[in-house]
Amino acid sequence: MESLYAITTGVLTACGLYLTLRGRTFPVVVGLTLLSYAVNLFLFSMGGLTTDGAAIVDGAGDYADPLPQALVLTAIVIGFAMTAFVVILAMRARSEVGNDHVDGRSHDDEERSR
Amino acid sequence: MMHLIVLPIVLPLVVGILLLYRRQGGTRLKRLAGVGSTALLVLVGIALVGQAASGEVTYYALGDWQPPFGIVLVLDRLSALMVLLTAVLALGAVVFACDGDDERGSNFHGLFQWQLMGINGAFLTGDLFNLFVFFEVLLLASYALLLHGGGKARIQAGVHYVVLNLAGSALFLIAVGVLYGATGTLNMADMAARLAELPAERAGLVTAGGLMLLVVFGLKAAMLPLYFWLPRTYAAAPAPVAALFAIMTKVGVYAILRVYSLIFGEAAGPLANLEQAWVWWLSLATLVAAGVGVLAARDLRLLVAYLVLVSVGTLLAGIGMGSPRAVSALLYYLIHTTLITGGLFLLAELIGQQRGKAGTRLVRGRPLQQGGWLAGLFFLGAVSVAGLPPLSGAIGKALLLAAAEGGQRPWLWPTLLLTGLCSLVALSRAGSTLFWRSQGEPSGEALTWRKWFGVTWLLAASPLLVILAGPVSDYTEATAAQLADPQRVIDALLPTAGDAP
Image (cartoon, rainbow over all chains, first blue to last red; front, side):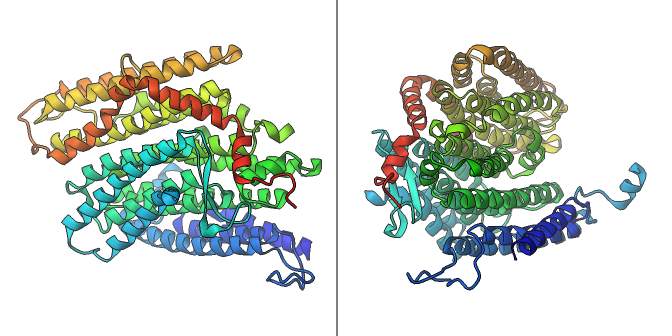
């Protein structure tokens, strides 16, 4: 399970990083979303992965570390808010600047600089 | 009195929420609430400094969950100083904004209060994850404030700023996760205590986490390879917001100072002073880049944004030297530079308003309506920020130069002094263009007392810091001594350290 988990997190991070480095706002937003999913998974695993562990400490037997779960909850809430904000910002930039390039350059400029 | 520590966070939070009920209309009421709350924060800041000045480290356990398990707010000399500094800066900015800037978009005062809440929280928290949360609070408020009033330039700068900071937040979470996984705690004092007896095989993990944190804080503080977002963002922001942003880079500097002096202090064994070499060389490079930027700026607001960068380089050099004497000098310089660069952002707006179409661009324009007064204030600010005697910039730089030891001198002295020269050349060129190269009839309206108050309130800090140089530097020296002794914080927070499970 550990290796599958690690590979999933790694692939998500790599995809997120690649998309964040793109030049258009839509891939960048998707990239940031993937990156935040990867981070949430990573945080979740930091307390050690347990199977069949109780989620609440009841003093008896095996339990999962509750702290990473609390952290992930907070991080998810903040991540959602930020994604919502960046989506609106990208749409606003599209309408104000007239194109969806991150630098606000039009398509023609890009052709010319090539 | 014991709830005083939590007040700098709760007060702006409650006022911000109350302001939401009056989002439409009621300008007078909103302004009263915003200014009143900020003025109260100044008083709370003074009280906190008074409480911290005894040298005792006090903490506030939220919900009475004792550390290391609960969330704590820690008050020592450094955090008290930063809270007071934020409140003083914010008061100038908010009074300035009351002159019409706050009506260009919705809910300016509420967002302003939440930004203050985030900044104060970041200064007071004693917990790495809460540092992240308060960073997010202050960033989310700052995104909205940056876009306040809208416009093409702000949106473009905003996209870069928001995307970069979101990537930074992701990295921050990874770093926090790594450190939690390696040490099993998030409380900074507890983490410092556990690092002292860290098993050798985990040292690599902690090093990675610690250096990732440095990248995050470097992004906030605008350290060299991570500063490219700053000039455009600050130049595009509305003036009162740009003035408040003067403290934002200092949040990064504060976080570096706090985390690396407490967690990676002398007691951390092989991990001690992990960041020092990096910060030292990058700070010098930042200074050089900022000096070039100052000379190249063709707009007064951009020029001031690069001056912020100069101050960041100077402050980080103080951290890179790594002696209590240097830390004391950098704290004095931090008070000076925050208030003066904030004041200069406001002043640039005033100058731009009176020059009609030319705005803040450094080109020939119409003469200013109230040129004499503005020129006088600009002269005061320029002399102070460039570091010429007799104002506070000179004292701050002299203290820093004196703190350099042995091999650090040949690097710091020429870099710092030459950057000062660059600022001086750029500022005198800007001043002569703005006030002397003019033609036509003066245009623009007379400025109201609120704007004058905002600017003079902040710029007056410079002569005041000279007059009170003795007491202020006594305080910063004691602060540096307190920072150099992290054991005191650990003992205050974890009375049972050692025999805890």
